[in-house]
Length: 352
Ligand SMILES: Cc1cc2nc3c(=O)[nH]c(=O)nc-3n(C[C@H](O)[C@H](O)[C@H](O)COP(=O)(O)O)c2cc1C
Image (cartoon, rainbow, N blue to C red; front, side, top):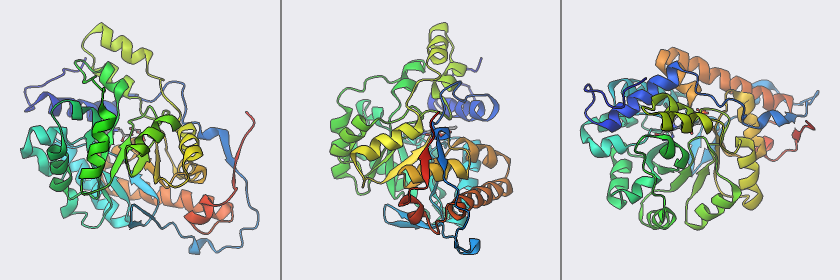
């Protein structure tokens, strides 16, 4: 069992963040049976692309910033020395390929400002599209405009992600479970903050109905973070110190809306909202399917974490591979650009 707080860390939040990193790197925390749903779709092969592979264009833009590829390094970490190394490696590679990146929840830095530098990656990534991150439920636990502003300004972020994690909070021992009235607080922040607000789950998905409420509250973008990849119920079950929490985490390990279903759902109610697909995307083919279903960006967490924990070279290899896989889909569906793929009918639902 993993201790909740270790004397080596300044606060329980810092110890929890260290546990999350270690567990996600060393243990099997994937959903057991629930998949991301993308296996139900197949691209129609184009035997005559009428394209030169070397001209395939992966560039795109999101929230007004141009990107080298429609890829997001999803929000993960910060707050410890190990997290700092990982964040800086991720940021360096994001800068190199002009990818978007999110840092992990900055609660630990709001509580202990001395660890702010573990998130502040602008020194190595001056140009990237960078997302700050705070748990939305914290708005019911003494966080407000001031704390959110600090999270944004301390890392010079382009937007703020408010993550929604009700299941994780239920499974966590002494989790923050009062979500009452959060939507009004999100609404208030959307109109008062100087940067766009993105609503994001952490791996259990956002339904069409909830996306509609969030859009009405004023969020500028949505990251569905659906089921099928990292199961946070499972992660918290592995940290649990009592039988009840461990049982909860184990029972709910497969809870959530598969990522593909979330993308289709959100797009069925709004064709314009900037949309990020994440949750169980593991390669460029998954990313391409998510984009063809209607997402504007494909976010990956665990694959980037594993590569970053090895080396910057391994991260370069991963991004190279993801880009090649994406380009191969574009080429073999006869689409020369991401926009062409998104506007095409190349993706079909299979019967099974
Ligand atoms: C180690 C780790 C820490 C994470 N911490 C956060 C976080 O602080 N804030 C957040 O919004 N999501 C966090 N996530 C969730 C991811 O951003 C993502 O939504 C989720 O893991 C699903 O993506 P995946 O299946 O590619 O791992 C974390 C994920 C990992 C692996």
